[in-house]
Amino acid sequence: MVVLLDVFPRSWVLMTCVLCWCVITEANDHCSRPLSRIVRNQLTEHFYSVFESKSEEPHRKCPLHLDRDLYRFQEGNKTQDYPSRWVCNFCGKAFLSEHYLDMHFDNRHSDELVKGTTVCLADFCDIFRCEVFENPRKDFFWEKKLCKEDRLTARRRRCEALMRSCLPQGNLSLDKELEIYEAIGANTCALLNCKNYWKPPHQEIAAWKIILYAVITPFFVMGLIVYYYAIFDHYFGDYPTDISWSREEEEESISLSRRSRRSPDLRKRYGGRPLMY
Image 1 (cartoon, rainbow, N blue to C red):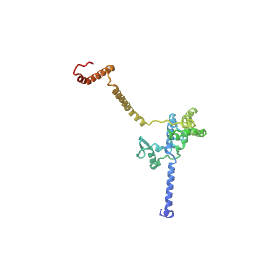
Image 2: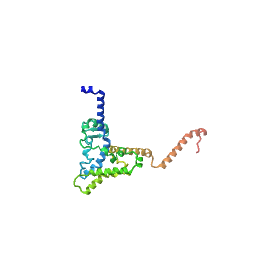
Image 3: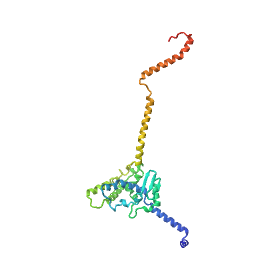
Image 4: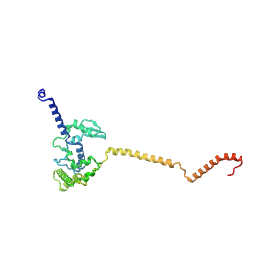
């Protein structure tokens, strides 16, 4: 080590270490986790579920096969206890968000990646419309206006070739093969045109939100009932049933009060003589 330091200046050694670190970092960051997650969620909902319902499995050489997902082990070892608590099942550490858990995987559990012929699912974002899923509330007005059908046609053909390569191997009937092909392409390849490409994804409500709404809603309804009952009782609860009788009684009491106020003055003026009304 001393000989090496004598031959190479310290600055060169430091530069070499920095370059090695940059190469390793670039190798780890070449595959986007958020974009891969978007593709993975769509595959889980519209791809793997189709094969499971048919009791079949995608072809082993299919790029979308579950065993070839680069982040499969790490994604399978996440636990979300509630929205602000994500747990690493490798070491038990908890984090405030999934983003910090992903950083933890990169820093501490980079050896838990799938080895061999792996695939970065983010590479298929152009087929699975990641830009639409990234910004589901964005208004893609200009993108729709400037959409070119020929570009999406090329994507659709590539998508169809990809889906054909994933059909199960074995002696399947043509009808069953066609049925699987149409099912796995209905929510991917069929949307690759200017009319449907910018269609917003279906937003599902998280389970914890459903539970929260179920707990709060009865209390909210009871509060409204009590509130409106109090208003009704305040404005209508004290009124007598006979309104006409109440008005006559009120006019008579007013007349008597007026007479009682002016009687002493009249007696003084007329010397105690009886008053004629």
